[in-house]
Image (cartoon, rainbow, N blue to C red):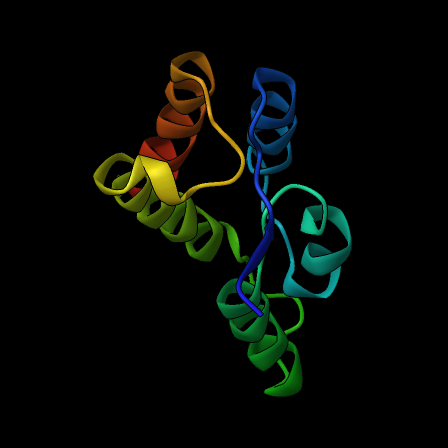
Length: 102
């Protein structure tokens, strides 16, 4: 339960940004995000979209909100995070979620 994967390197953050540059259907999302943004609540949301018949719905905004949530939480409680995320990585992640959530 919780979070099992974060984009904690610049390379992973860039890979995530590339994935989120185009619509990401719920039906594909869990497979492509599993090792980058592994989070129970996010995957529950994506699973609900699929179960409710919205497998082709774009889940980028859900992913962006999760990254923004992590950004706020990480900087409020840095000692609680097992995987440290560098400022350069946060810069890529912030650009990504801000572009989607604007």
